[in-house]
Every structure is written in structure tokens, then in C-alpha cells.
Length: 226
Image 1 (tube, rainbow, N blue to C red):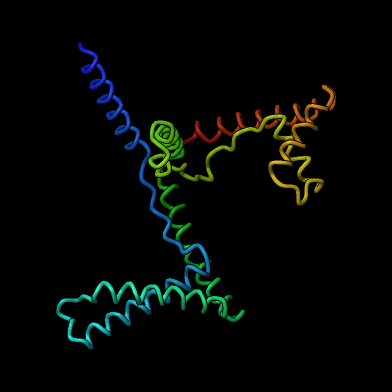
Image 2: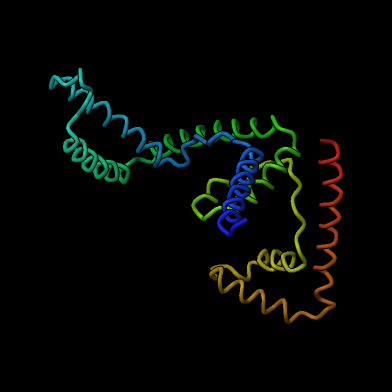
């Protein structure tokens, strides 16, 4: 085979592998919830704008075409965006509570639908789907990788943490690092860990060992019974 043929064969195999991974990765429902009060508010105001444009089209005799001049739409959208931002700054506490409630209800319904879909699949199916998604994120460019986030499944066993993570969690819970930036916090934690004696580190190693045992036990129970 020529070098060109080898490359074509390699590319074909990669495409086939990607196709198989996408099939194994499953397709969870897109979360349709409106994630914030601001988005509920702006969506509501956007509906009002669309209705007004439609009414203006009717009044100007363009209902049969169903179109409004592009320049008019752009102008209306610009003015609308400015007005919505100004209106949002002036919402009352009662109105904000209302929009928070609508966002919460929307998100709850979306999350419940997502959870129902996840639990309609065997726990091992979701585990394999997440492994496929992990491989896709590694195989594709940054833009393509974003399309394959892990599927969240509360039934999946939480991975065990290392002794350093055990130490880090314990130290941060102390409150000593309040208001310290993440980067600086990481430096200080690393320095403190290195300064510990083997005897002092043993406490966190024991915690990590117990966590690993917990993971092993849960995996035997969850995945063997699925």
C-alpha cells in the first residue's frame, strides 16, 4: 500500500470508531429549563416583541407574506434589548420572586425529565456511554468535545479520592483559606502537604484507603446487580 492509501485507511478506521462511539454514547434529552430569573424575564419580553411585530405586519397589510423588513426588525431588536435591560434593573422584589419561582419550576421539570431518561437505562449502559463520551472528548477537537459532556447519573459510584485530596478538603473546611484566591490557595495547600511528616500524612492515607474500599464495595453492589 502507498503512504496515501495507508492514511486513507487510517482515516476511515478513525471515522468508523467515532461513529461507533457516538452510537454507544446515547442521546440524553437536552435540558430545556430556563436557568435564571433573568432568562425567564427576557424570554417573556421577547414574546411580547414578536407579537408586536406580527401585529404591525398585519396592520401594514403584509400578513400574507408574514414578513417585516429586515432593517425594521434589527432596529426593533436593538431597542428591545436596551429596554429589557433597563426594565430588569427596575423589577420589584415581588416581581423578582415571581421570576425566580418560574425559573425554579422550569428547571425542576427539566431535571426530572433528564433523570427519568437516565434511569430508563441500565446503570451499566450509562457507565459505558460515559466511557464512550470520554473517548470522544479525547478524539475530537475542543469544539466537538463540548458536545459530549458526561451523563449525570446519581446511581454511579463516586470515585475514591487520594490522600492529598483528603488533606485538601479537610484544610479548606477549616476556614483558614477564606477570601484567598484559588491559585494562591492551591500553592499554600501544596506547600503545607510537602511540609507534613510521614506520620502526619498517614492520617490522610488511611482516609484514602477507606474511601477506596468504599468505592470497591459499592461497585460490586451496584454494577453486579445491574
